[in-house]
Image (cartoon, rainbow over all chains, first blue to last red; front, side, top):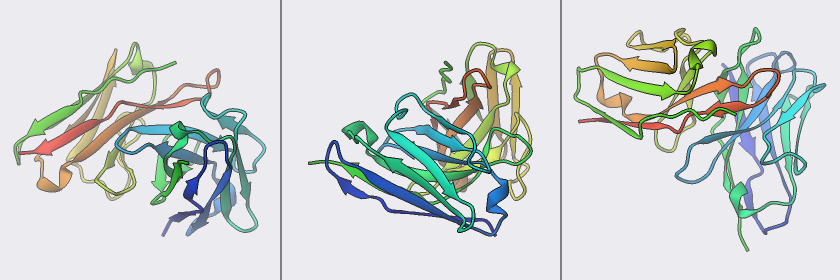
Length: 120
Length: 109
């Protein structure tokens, strides 16, 4: 079965950096585009970034452009989000999510998330 | 950029029908997807492409989309349907942005 397991969250100081990871299993990871979506405590869902199946195309929300970098390692079925210049607004649970196949624009499987807290 | 407006809360008695709306100008021209999120859990896709259901999602969940409003309908509501629900669209190739609605809390009375 499809499994997505995030890791790497924690407490980081304002202006700091953190990399979160997502380990994928149960499907052909290298055939799927992948997303990061975040949710601040008590708030709604916010899309963060998308990477194509081969890593050749990457897209970002305006709020993170220039600070966050999405990447993937298809040989190890891993997805990453490198986050730099972190601020309080970046505190959230970060979910990795699989893009539905066939060019669909929905997210058909989600991990359980990893919590990032930006605080001094 | 899209702003998808949902009612903050919807209350429904068990066995009745809940309707959750998602409003935006000309949303009928977009594919709308719906997610259910229970407390402390990850979102789950319940309807995609306006009205299709992923495998394992009960037929009680259905969707429609026309004009300026998309709707998620839950028939024969059960206590286990109590959750937050979010609509979502894609902005298209000119605006590679994935937008979520403001979210609706469904309370089963």
